[in-house]
Length: 272
Image 1 (spheres, rainbow, N blue to C red):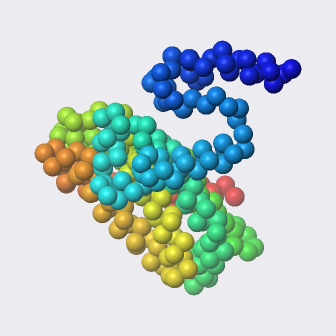
Image 2 (cartoon, one colour):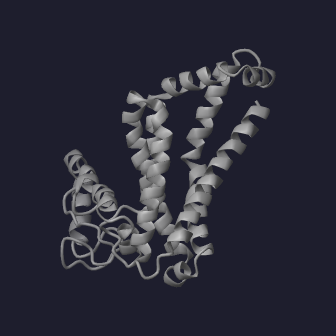
């Protein structure tokens, strides 16, 4: 009886989108873009639809990911111009990048912890100072705090002290940049750019940590500046791109982010 009732409800709404109730003339809603399905939700549907949102090379995550390599800055530019359905949302893209970083840090936490412990033990002055703050087993406690702060750095701290400063510095240092895009549009660009940066360095970490953990940080910095600058050029276009302002914005953003991590580490050490 219940199934018959549901079937009757579906039949009664064949001409309307179930999401926004807009009249349908095709299998996709002209208002919100949701696909119309007459059948009930099934496990098969979930197994097909969810991967398709990610693996589709014409739209979705992988399309967004490869377009960042093919033409840095173009994803944000096209998103601002109105092409939004084919790309992953900028905030979501940053969160995916952060998730990749967190996964990499989780997988290699023992490697990073051992590296931090070794560095502390090689410095008698630092070791004594940490013992005064953390007591017994200070190197291990210090390594745990360090990894905790880094994890925070790629979640809410990265959102506040990486993405937002980059957008504000780009607007602050260049009148040409302000003439092309407003604050909201520049934030879209920042989320995409920094999201791709943390995503790529997170994925790269799975390789560099196995080969040589010492090279991960320098390579990450290089990626940040090269990809960031190329993205700025692609987003603003040659006519409105201020190369010096873009580079300066990247430097100050990186300094702001690292300074935040240092401050958070200091707070964690003194409140332990």
